[in-house]
Length: 377
Ligand SMILES: Cc1ncc(COP(=O)(O)O)c(C=O)c1O
Image (cartoon, rainbow, N blue to C red; front, side, top):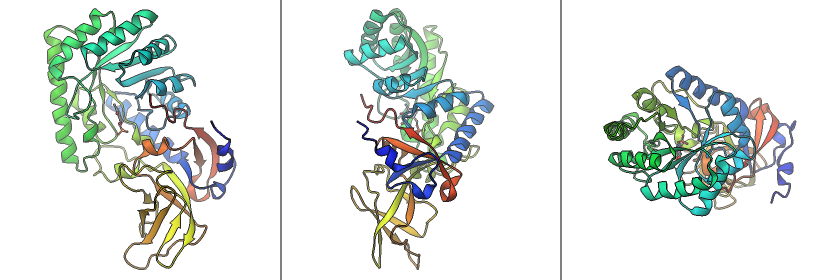
């Protein structure tokens, strides 16, 4: 239930100084530049862009991505798909396995309303999906997910042919391969990421060879994230990129060695916080790990490299000076945090505050609802 707290965080037209804290703030100018850079990259390289909406969980941002040239968006969960579809996002790919009968009935119902695709990685998964789709008779595109070295979901590449045949025999449409190497995204060095995606490419080649051997056409290979997409795009194998985090660019991604030829994405997601307690050796801010996820490490304080952030618990952050004589912020002063990991940070908030004109002197343009917040099922 939204108790109306979003109205107390900020209102359109407010100066940034008036945004209540802690608040999740989107620098809309930086986000627009990120969206445009990725759209231009995919156009130039001749690959489709289907950004992952699990990052922002917002129908407004998804629609902007599509208006900017994306073919649709990915989601990870049935309920995420439902939330975005209800708000006008009409081309969705659930890039994940769904096997529960009740959820599959919802998938089938959704397929009757929007253009929908889904991933499978087992014979039983295909059979369960087929049973649900038989009842609705709605069309759905089915991708076979192969494990390309991540060690999470995904069939062995050589099993792609049997799965594709099962999909066809069940009267469903085999759309291609899902090949996402999540663990490669945050390998710090370019060489390490290159090596991981070369292994992933081998897996894709093996799956394609298995499909060729039984004369099943693989129309599309889809995958890639914000850390590796340049490599997938250059491989000649992947035809669609699923990058998500590029839209906001969190601290963890900024710590990666930059890939040559990759667009330079900017930080666009911040937690605005305020100093609530001040001591000789530290300032305490009102943003703890209920306002930003810490699974990928702590936030960085934006434009204050002379300060270090330490975890102060659920509701607090502790700020100290780096070595030397940094000026500690004063009581009431605002500090902007760049979250360690954008996706789970967004999921902690009902609303993002969209600012135009920068974080120093900008103005609130809009409140952006996190429409699929908590849509985990
Ligand atoms: C299947 C899939 N595709 C794409 C992405 C997007 O990756 P990123 O946010 O690193 O760009 C993810 C993220 O976890 C994912 O799970």
